[in-house]
Image (tube, rainbow, N blue to C red; front, side, top):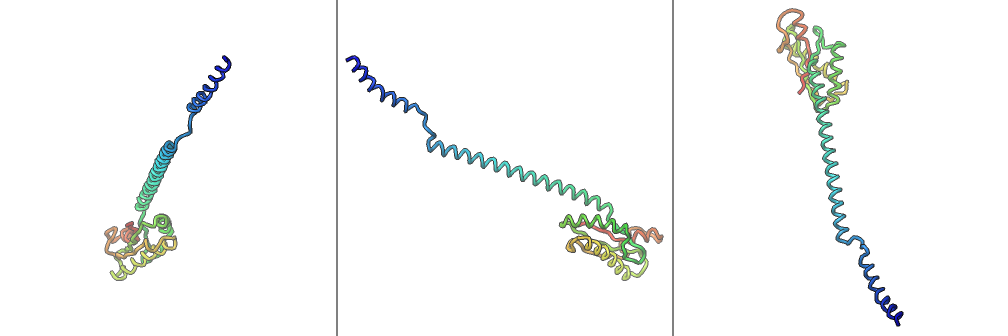
Length: 187
């Protein structure tokens, strides 16, 4: 009998122990927890993408600013050497003029948003009409050199002042020489 009581007690205790063991077994995440984890992950991904985009924009702004600073520095340097001189009664470019113009052509071809006006000038010898025409030929000579060096025609315009805007007053050969020029004026 005693054995029977023990056996009956075990039969009753076994399901209770099994139920308790099952109830303490950890369950997997609930559907709500899975959705919450997915939403948190989406938010983290969105924040990371926004941060990466902000960094890319900042890097692009920095690169553009550096490019603009370099362009301004080059332009300032070119504006220190923007005059080419011509011999008496000619529109032929000298080798030093070509050297100067090469630097301008390189800058203009790399910076298509920049434009110039080429001013043709003469000394006061000759009639006003002749000097206007000679100033035009000088400006066109500079323009042709720049076009042949890869500068777009939309970046260039030519104007002739003839003898109207002298760089130097006087009747000496030195004054005349300073007035026979082409000037590149950046817009």
